[in-house]
Length: 373
Image (cartoon, helix red, strand yellow):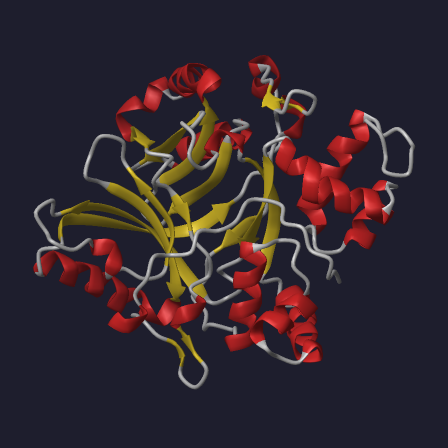
C-alpha cells in the first residue's frame, strides 16, 4: 500500500495507526503522525478514506462517571396495543436494542445521579398509563469498552479472520473501564455540545464546533482543554467494524446481548474475562445485583462459532445465562442528551413534548474535515 508521498506503508503500520487512534482519537492528525511515523497528509487520507473502505469507523466513548451520571440496564416489554411508543417518553437512553422476533427491548441509560429514583418512577408511570406491560431495571457498577482486536482483522480483505485458539490464549483484559460513583454532575452547557459533536464526528475540531454553535473559538478551545480533556470526560476511542451495518443493505452481523444473573464473585470474574477476550464485544458491564452484561457485533460467518464458544465456556452456569439475539437494523447507540441540559437550570429529567424527536444515533464513520486542532 502506498503513502500519499510515494513511500510504501507496511501492514504493521496500518495496525499501529488503528491502535494509535484508539489511544488518542482522530481529531489531531499531527499528533497521530508523530506517533506513527506517517505524514499528516497520509493520516488524513487514511482516516477519511481508507478506514471507511475497510468498513471501519470510530466510536467516542463518554465516561459517564466523570459527568456525575449513574447508569443502568432496562429490559422493557411494551404494550403492543398502545397507540404511542414508550420510546417517545423515555429519556437518557444511550443504547436501544430490540429483541429479534419479540416486543421486548434491552436498553442502557445514563443520567445525573440525583435523578435516579425519579427516572425509574417515570418508567413505572409509563406502565401505569399503558405504554409498557412490564420492565426490569439493573444498576450498573462499572462499564468497559474492549478495543477492536485488530490482530484478528484482515486489513487486505476488510474482514475478520479469527483464530479461536489464539483467542483462548488471551490472558490480559483490555479496554478502558468506568467505575460508576455517586457524584454530582460536573458538566456545563458548552461541554454537552462539545461531547455531542465529537460523538457525531470524531474528527471535528473545537474551531468547527465553535462555528456550528456560533460561539467564540477561544471559549470552545478552553472548555475542550480544561473540561473535556483535563476532566477526562472521554473514556476512550474505539475502532468498530461497520461494514456489516451498511444502511439499505441486509446486515452482515448478528447482535447478541449476553446477560448473566446471580453470579458468585468467581463466576463474575470468569465471564468477565471470557467476554472481554471475544473479538466482537463492543461493551460490557457489571450490575450491583451480581449480574453481568455484554453486547456483541458478531459477523454472520462467525455467529455459530461465537455461540458455541460462549456455550462451551459457560456450561457450568448455563442456568444463570440468557443469550438474547437483537435486531441490528433497530439498534441505536445514542449521543449525550444535550437537549436535556438547560443553560440556567442544568440537567432536566424529561423533555417537553415540543422537543420530543427521534434520537440522534452516534456516528461510527470517519468524516472528512479541513479544520483540525
